[in-house]
Each structure stands twice: as C-alpha cells, then as structure tokens.
Length: 152
Image (cartoon, rainbow, N blue to C red; front, top):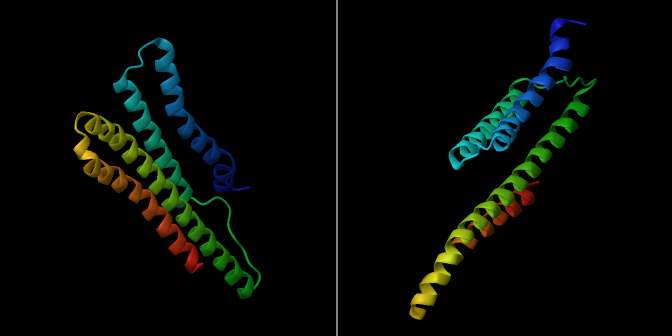
C-alpha cells in the first residue's frame, strides 16, 4: 500500500470530518462559556460556511477512488449516468435555494406589508406587490428545475 493510498483512505476523511466539526465545536464552546453574542455566532457561522467550502473543494480536487472500465461502452454508460446525476443535483439546488430565498424575502416583506396596511389601508396593493415579488423567486427556482429535468 503506497503512501498516497494511506492518505486517501484514512487521513483525507479524517481531515474532512475535522473541518466539518470544528465550527460546530466553536459554536458549542462559546455557547457553554456564556460568551455567545450575535457577533461571535456570526463568526461561527462564517467559519462553518468556510469549512463547508473547503470540504467541497477537497471533494472536487481530490476524488477518492478511481473509476476503471474494461470497455468503452461501460465508460459511456457511466458518463451518461454521471451527467444525469449532476442534472438532478442542479435541479435540486435551483429549486431548494430558490425556495430558501423566497422564504427569506417573504419573511421580511410580509410583516412590513402587514404593518403598512395597518397604518394605511390604501397601501394594500403596493404591499401585495412586494410580497409577490418575494414569492416569484421560489417560482423561478422551480421553473429552472423543471427546465433542467426536461433536458435529462
């Protein structure tokens, strides 16, 4: 067993797991010590996102295991399955991120619209437009997902 195989099988997964659990440990440690403020939790969230990005970069740059095929037909079948899988992943990401963005937009716009309507009932149409614009983000994400799935 070569050194690269040892790194690939043992150390790389341990490094990835450590990168994923480090921000969680930081957040739990600050919460237990009573120093959990908005700023420190924001730093922990940024560290978590950076760790996630580092793990994804490692997964792309250092693929674990190699694919070996005996004939070209099997290789083409595997490539088609891989591209279909990436299409499904893209469709899921577009729908999911679009709906999360929709939730954030509506979560901020709807209370403001309710407050505006309570103070001035004539502003109902304007408030409804702002809430509908936020919901449009989710609709566009689902529409792109359907378009991607239509190509598969």
